[in-house]
Length: 248
Ligand code: SF4
Image (cartoon, rainbow, N blue to C red; front, side, top):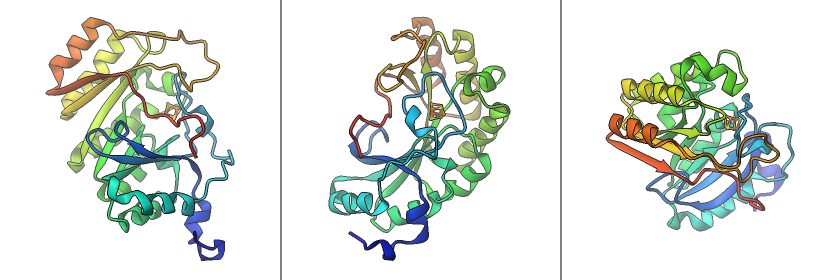
């Protein structure tokens, strides 16, 4: 482990929220570790990592702890995914990505598209992006709780498609958060952009904490059929990317 005096300044500034040493879900088709970063400007009702919304949370996790795990396990991994919170809220992300590259690992990113300017800078550094598309344009700001999020997401999604980087768009279904019509409009937006892989995620109540939402919400068959017809690669998925209890 590095002596604290040997740490680069970004290693002490980066807001680490958690670390999962192995996942086959967070970057589909790849063996990935996941680094969760703190901070998100949005407040979605179904957030699975609400403890990571605030950048001020002190987890006590150090970068050299994560780096040592990755160094030891890199032969079992294809890459590392940065998740959150909203990973692009972290100003030190380019330095962290460069550090992962020195280990010879690929780099993926989960994003909600809240920061198109930052995403544009990051895209050349990435191998894969999981893009959370939440609803249609007219209902975005209400769902995210952030004025202007619809325009930001639209800009980010266009940048991602224009980059040619491998990606997956995913939308979480809960009937109390999004209507069937809004979900269809969001999927149509993605199809018009040229998205090839689209995932409809089942809402999972684990990790959400105290919530007025119903515990389960099965996507309507008609919605599944509509989406399946739009995309060559479509999946309904039950698993979510969430920080496991007790993970460090
Ligand atoms: S964008 Fe993601 S991390 Fe942020 S509040 Fe919504 S679900 Fe949670």
